[in-house]
Length: 563
View 1 (spheres, rainbow, N blue to C red):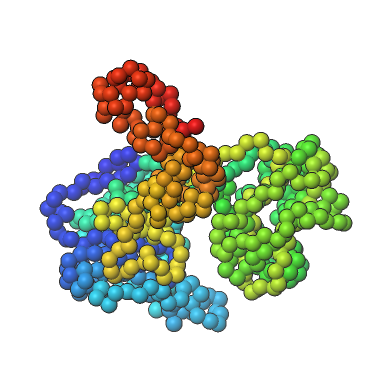
View 2: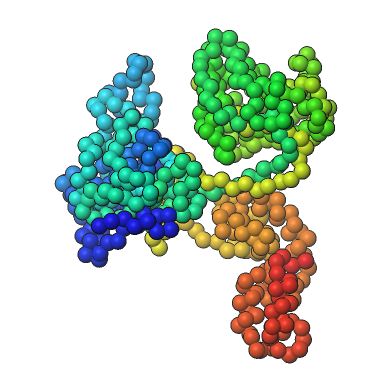
């Protein structure tokens, strides 16, 4: 058998006889969260797993390759599907025998206990550690990334390990030897089931992303934000890493990497503690890979940027900020135009959400007295009491720019952390939280994702962002989705909420004549109604007694939201 690349996805042609060998399917997957990881299988109660292997195909240990086996679990001859039709393969959690290198006291830092309850009627299989004294983190599943989960029979690949973290330094067998999206080596008798978790939007990988090898896909997760454009004066995207334990508590990252006034620009962090550690974890798209992060936060510690604004009359400051669960949560922004001798507060204390970039994107527009200065300094100052020493706060995409002249909606994509197979065979993107939740059902019936329509009372308030598409007011929902299909097709986000401000004006009068279904938008639904009465009289818009091309022209001329 040979994989054939079609529309960016490597697909396998299998006979009905091959598919009939087993009823076992991959049913639910949670990745990349250490102790919370699991793969659920569904099949006939008591069905044998003998001779079956689950593999994960991705980029292995190198981002320059694709189609590499990066994780394997070979089922034992005695493994069977549970009496309720489920088997759960999961991270075993902290290893009491774990010995860190260098030695340190305390439990395995990679994970704790497996956090989810498994139905006792399901087969419960914790996967093992690579070595008797290894960490549970050594066996983690990569996430997020383009990666393909395959359940195969008769596996004869060259890899000898049983589970393995992609970062452990040992590359797996390369099945796509020329990295073209077609598997050149297929060391198995048959693929019984597969699903690909995607971080790529579209049919082919972008940038350094790797291929996927299944027509069943989950993801990507799409999110949007408003990018307000003005001329960048100084922009720090943190393109290079910065690490080290500083003896002075101060770390100078250096000049901006983009902008009109790079000369004399500077970014630094200042801590009272001499043991604060600066590092470069993952940054926020689209300017990833790095952010500037530090530990050891105390009251009045700060990040600071400095640049000249000469030549720019109006100045705006924007940035992205993130904190760990124990990192400082409240900051304010002060400005100095005299080299730090005096400061003015330009943003009163603001609060950051825990462990998320969400809510951490800030803009201070048209800052008074900031333009045409030889030097402007902004400090992002910790306003809370001393937190836990290991708590972190990171900052990214710090931009001093001229006042805005255009807003652009930017859509970004990420691979899912959790995927849940639905009754119709499609895959639903689950929540990313690692705490037990209503969507996690290892070893029992899967969570069924609800479907919504405009006007559904459970769809959510049109004035509040929520995780599903549509909203509860039928007219407002139809009006917004007529302007922006993302709001119904994907998610009712903050951009949809902003657009919903127009509902007060657009949902008060009578529907326009071409709005046959009274949803206050003239669109394909109304076109279908008109065409259904072609040659009749009921949908006659110009009063000539017949529905024809003249009425079609009127409808097309009214296309979009009603006035």
